[in-house]
Amino acid sequence: MTDWIDVIDQTALAEGEHILTEVDGEEVAVFKIAGKCYAIVNTCSHDGGEIASGDIIGNEIVCPRHAARFCLKTGAVKSPPAYENIQNYAVRINNGRLEIKQPE
Image (cartoon, rainbow, N blue to C red; front, side, top):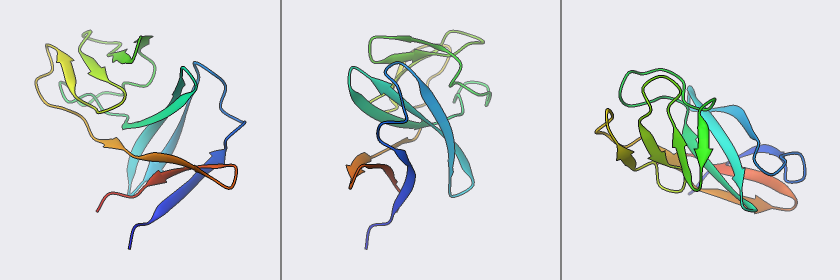
């Protein structure tokens, strides 16, 4: 059985903004970009620091410390100094609520 975690009302997250929530003890950043929501762990795989405050360029987030880039859709690393992907989470809207899929 798949568990979905209720995060926020779908209208509460404005375009270009993000919120932080927790999933299984991990801080997760949820972004709204071009009308879609994406969720990634808020930890850069390069140095373990937070990543949510980084700049958004298209569908990528740029780490605020060393400029590693990650895809917001998949968590895939796009440029060094990071070489490992970061965890991403499925997101859905259910009855007007934004939900994140709990990892299996």
